[in-house]
Length: 369
Ligand code: PHE
Image 1 (tube, rainbow, N blue to C red):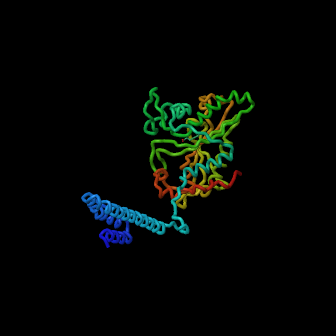
Image 2: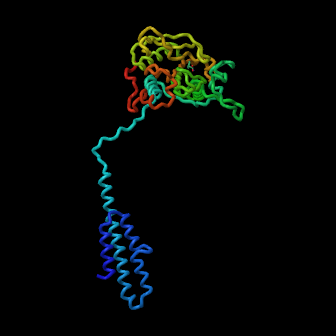
Image 3: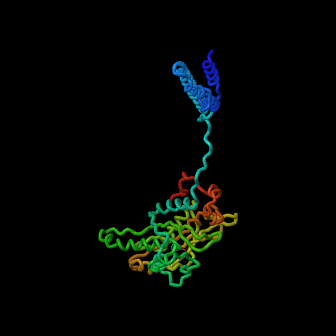
């Protein structure tokens, strides 16, 4: 056997059993690399006579091509085997049960909001909204707040820096400014409505964020209120009381809740009241509709004539009532959450405990009586 035949037999034997791509690469360097055996043979061609070169050249080049293609073939085979092995080991087992996914929860405030909307929507209220950043006129002046009222002070209310016109806006301290915005709109549209013989009453609820400089177990700097406003030609306190009683019964899912109106003062309602409902505090948490204690749930009253006038409505022609619930507070009462601050602490563990499934219908199944 010639040297070349010997070299070819040796290399092709080793190529055939190379265990992986790295071993194959080592053989390639050894044979075809810069100082590899075949490369060295190719270098000898230069020193040969033309006759010798004519016979040896094709042999050496043939050897180089044969070894190079044997390496390429083996490499393809090794790579295919590696892929097969990976496909076998990484196979997805479709019969495995899925790993549990963490599900999002609906925040109690949003759940309570949906429940409140469901009840008021059944009573014919529609939704209205207004800006969180309000001007002094809508938040205070039009609502009949006297100039030195404490809510106008820096330490109770978040005031924004002066704007270019020297005006200071506020983060609204309640949802009542939307009363003003809605009545102003009514006033604008009134002539056209009257001309058409259709005078719709105002019957709105206004959910939204409100802000006060306050923080303890039952106060947070940001909280949620739901305003209610009804304006028509002959609205009286009986309508107000019926509406709130109906709401409380359905919201707390207790057919007969005893309530009382306690005289109170708000600049924008006259008379003003706070409504309390009967509750039982003996068991640690509060149960609405039982027991002998009272729990304040909502501020309310008849819209003050000055407020109607400030919106261009004649108080001899129009009357109405308004109320303002704390949405988060109602949620605390209904679902037994002790500290308001927890509601806005963004603690996922708290949310998993007190939150609601996104697919749960509002808990207001008792219907209007
Ligand atoms: N705006 C009042 C508050 O924030 C609540 C209220 C609304 C009272 C409407 C009467 C009528 O305390």
